[in-house]
Image (cartoon, one colour):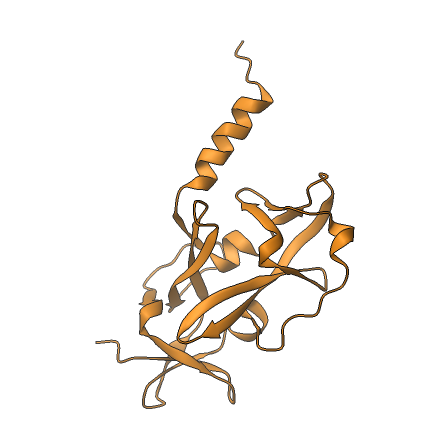
Length: 179
């Protein structure tokens, strides 16, 4: 019989979550359990709120139930998403006016090239979590045949560096020439 202490398990999970790794927005972020610093399970992530500033993406926070949780209260991001404060101390905070809810407003939307030609739809967004910098970064847009179970076949990854911006009406991601 092998006995493993809680400290050993915590250390192993910390090592797993401390390495930079690419994750899927739809598969790995949405639905993640949110736990406050007292151990209270507040619910699951429903969406990710982002801001686009000077061509870069800044994570504003997450939406749990219908409440906005600012990214600066997220302590760690691994198997679950842990907060560095109590859930009930957060109160009801509005989603920042300049933020975009990624699942609600980007997944399924069109991808246009710089000339306005339709080149695909946003099936998912690849992110990188780096626990040492406490940063969640956009890596690529996934377009093409994409199965809901997270297996891509014949899909195309468009590097985030090729994204020029977000068009509001009609909503679309605009990218540089792909070839």
